[in-house]
Amino acid sequence: MFAVVFASIILVVIALSINPLLRTEVGIRRHLLRSTPIGTSIEDVLQIFGIDDTEIRSHGVVLHNTLRIPLRSVFPNDVNDPSRVLGNSHIWKNLGSYQLIVRIDVEAVFVFDENGHLMEVFVRKGRDLI
Image (cartoon, rainbow, N blue to C red; front, side, top):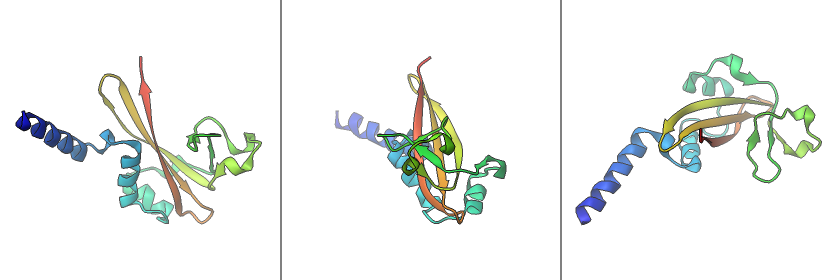
């Protein structure tokens, strides 16, 4: 019995190290911040993640009222409460997806200040139930 439990734990550890997308949102964020710590320039983030500079959005992100996560479909000039807007530019990057029972898409939002330095990273997992 102990051998089965031990083997299961080892398999989970190997899976998480091979595919960081299987980690929790907090774990993925921590993983991203190891390679792009707060203060990293926008140019370095583009290079590290192989992102084209056309993906840079020239406005900050609007945070959800209570969850404090960025909303994709709302633009800052459509917001009545400017305190919900974070940063001066951002990049919304699809990190990949994986299939368990449902398909799970993992996205990261890199938010930059007025000087083009990373000020926050958000990670969101979206589940496709269809």
